[in-house]
Length: 430
Length: 70
Image (cartoon, rainbow over all chains, first blue to last red; front, side, top):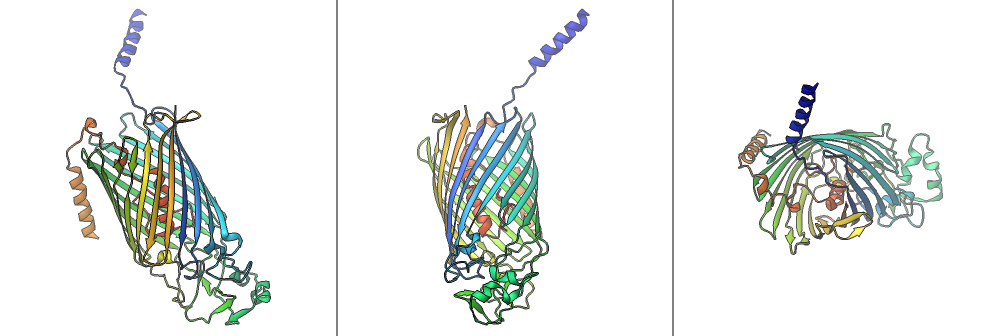
């Protein structure tokens, strides 16, 4: 009996003496509040077939809460809303009030919408922190779109944590609640065509024998599958870089149901100043995308850091694209950092893109969405960040660790331009 | 395509042949501005790009789903 008691006591002592200190993956609960105000304008609205205002404003607010469940596991809840008002999408139904005009906003129901999203993710790290598994589930909804997603990733660190390899996968199962341009709805299944009140109470000018090519989409589902590979490497005590390779396969309804198209070989019909749609955009029901990108960051000195990014993208719709950006954080004090940045982007046009009146009624696929046209864009940005590593300022039990404020101006070589102001507040629990 | 794969392999070999930086030498590497990802407050900028541009992926942002974009 004494021998067993001694053996047990020795065993416990032995275990205690070899216990290794394990740093928590996340020391305490962290809360990020992110918000942004976005505005854009241009003269090539896809809703009105490549002509008309693209004016849109969007306000977002998001909470990201990361909770350490134990030394190894972290649960993150990411919940946000985004509210937009859009002169462009208001013209899905441009005949609600006053003279219809593609360059004027309408008071239609589609003038605004609310997007809401909740994502929950869970990550687990091995004792030596060289293996990290994560899984996530997400749901988002807006008036005409619902999405549910699941994903996971695995990351392996080795070479004394100088090298990192990762693989990730995501699946999104989405469903449209298709909204069609007002003037096309009477030509859908069960519609009464030109006998509809829209046409009896308004006068069609131009081609009065208005006969659009329209049928509702039978399948409103859209599935997206992505597979990503990552590799990062510390190159020097002041330099590190990464490579990423993403494959995405999309299937289903890839057209946007409320985007009009005007055919060049069909006579034009109008109500007021608004040209009636000849059709809605038609795009293939599958798309395969490949993106390969790299980052290289260089800690020049205590004041300057250089952050660079490059990406090459192509897909089977005929689009090739290059993205390059540089950001140079400048630490002006131990609490404040400035973030000047520049980003260049260009893309070739999709095979199916046609400008206003460029498509023909004999074409199989067509779109006048200028987001799928050929263009180049320049973006200039500037930001400032405040960081207090001691998180002295408090809001209830949370200390304020950092505040970020950034502004970006984005200009295409077409008529489109946009700007965005973003803010981020980071709190840590005491 | 083959050239691209060879180029990628060479870059990968170049990366992995570098000296090992010890934990105590990673003060600068661990600076928040050295992170190999965008800052969280830039997330909505990346989302705006994914709405307005054809290209997505390879930047840590969304590659599809969740909205009517792309």
